[in-house]
Length: 290
Ligand SMILES: CC(C)(COP(=O)(O)OP(=O)(O)OC[C@H]1O[C@@H](n2cnc3c(N)ncnc32)[C@H](O)[C@@H]1OP(=O)(O)O)[C@@H](O)C(=O)NCCC(=O)NCCS
Image 1 (tube, rainbow, N blue to C red):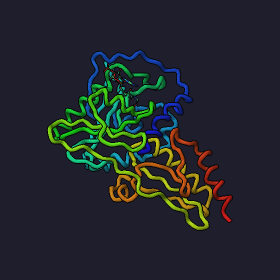
Image 2: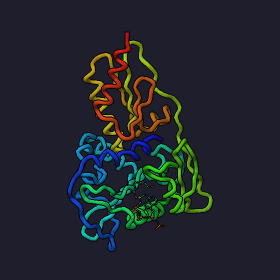
Image 3: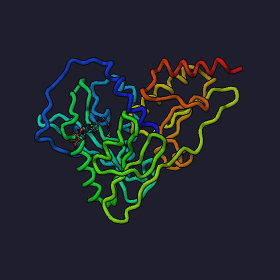
Image 4: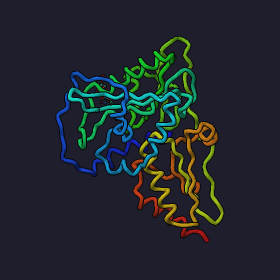
């Protein structure tokens, strides 16, 4: 589970983009609402309509959304008193996630906008808790026996400790990524991670660039777009391939949900490396080819 780390650092990236807007935020009468056509564009950029970087992700999330909507994807938004959307949660049947389990919904991410930019900071005012509760109630009403989430042991994005505080327990571990779980009924079965099975290899006489993309995470979407562009610009010595890990067979084969590899080496994607940095790394490998 890599997207966790990626996302963790994205906040630092965005603080580069200074915007003067600051609004006082009031959530005393906050409301949890369903995703509407009106809010869809905002949801698709993770509430960061102010971010130039988000635009680099192209339409990947939109394509993913259309596909997953028919596979049980659920989205809820938190609306502040003044109508501004401040938080979101997205979750789907665990069968379509990168964990193994039954009768459970998997939280891809919960995000309460915390940047000063754009709509402002809505965190620590109860939105996160309200979104999680609404998602759990929804999952129960759909017949789920448990809720599953992922969280990190390191204090960046998606802290496992936050879910622990909300009544979740550890079901499985994969490095720093914990699979958190809240059973709703007696006899519910705990989920397990799908773990890495293999990595991309090398191609004789070429440099291979491989992106594993889950579609829902804008960070890996940005990385994919940058890597693809860099590979194309470097010409025929570079072979770019993409693994669509929303395809369960692909996910099961590799056990990797989202990542960037140059030959067999994984490139850290948190924060998303710049286009220039990715291109430089690939070019360095090209130079080493005989
Ligand atoms: C974590 C997050 C979803 C919480 O939402 P929120 O609206 O800020 O939190 P709430 O106001 O609902 O607070 C719920 C509880 O979490 C605590 N909390 C909030 N942010 C926290 C943080 N960053 N670390 C630890 N605890 C936190 C609050 O103190 C509160 O505790 P209480 O129930 O004892 O009062 C939100 O801060 C966020 O989006 N963070 C960044 C993304 C992220 O990490 N998402 C994954 C969640 S682990």
